[in-house]
Amino acid sequence: MDLNSTAVVMSALFVSAFEGNVANCEEIDDNYRNREVQKRIEISESVLPMLVNIDSIDSSYLTFDADNIPYYNGSSDPLKVFTESARRMDIKLWIDNVKNHGFYIDGSLEVEEKRRTIRYMLADLIADGQRLPIPSHTVRPWTPDKQLWDVDKIYMINLKRRPERRAKMEKIFNILGVNATYWEATDGQNLPLDYHYRVLPGYLDPFHKRPIKAGEIGCFLSHYRIWQDVANLGLRRVIVFEDDLRFTKDGLERIREVLEDLDASKLDWDLIYLGRKKQTDQEEVWVPHHRHLSTVGYSYWTLGYILSAEGARRLLNAEPLRNLLPVDEYFPIMFNKHPNKACTF
Image 1 (tube, rainbow, N blue to C red):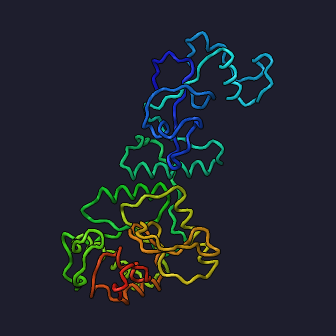
Image 2: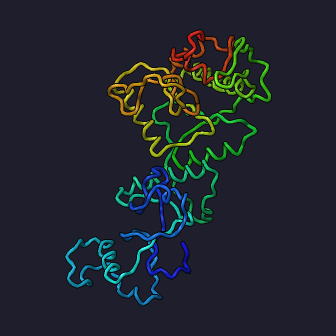
Image 3: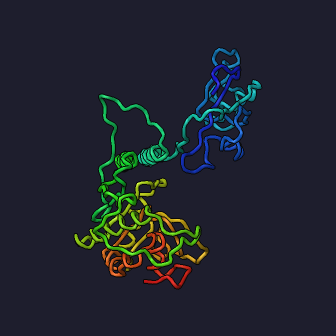
């Protein structure tokens, strides 16, 4: 915002961190909201926050009190009153988006929901690699207690040579209250000799028509070792996260509700994607009596999933190391949604 502007009233544009079409000003178009067009524009209704140039003599006519406006019979809402006082004195209202001033949070939200929104917003900033305010040396910021959400373990897969990703995820988990356990990934640059595997003969990536990469082998073995851990420890159900995931607003609350619905419905299940990339237009339908659960078609990404003990058993019993392929391909084959029906275990 230009503090040297001669405008009497100037507001700053704030856009929601999660709903890109939500801002503190409703009368702007998408190009302006997305800052594809950056400039100061005139608006018809006053919005907060605003700066009032009290050095201007005209500012003395501005008011938030309806009693200060003669013959005014309109709304007593302070912003409506302010807008009317500006209109009567022909004082223009401006909004500025040249600089990113921060994020908009709906003022009508309850206090706890505002706090939760801010926590997700901070997690999003960390995921983007943006700097956060310098912490106080005397006051430690409040963070929620870390939880497991009624699963036995939460894994976070990370390569030892990528400590910056681990540090980033630990900050996010701390802000959101996730009780995650670090799981050292199998490095494709240093594949272990104690795992005897054979790549599926003739395998080519279905989109890029290339052989499997060493990194994809390491990724598969990282997940495979987790499935073994689940089976060996007799864990009931677990969550698996990779170190490049990003949480949507209220994402953890949705996970909790998914688990609640699973317990209430007694549904038999093996694996639930928490994030995925749809690869086809295969029909998907919502599961009755579940708030967030649907069937899935051919999908990629393993950045987050819930795994049951039975799911781990089935993934292991198929003996995938005999015909190894990327884990993105293995999952759809196991639930019979791979478009290439020749792929089977």
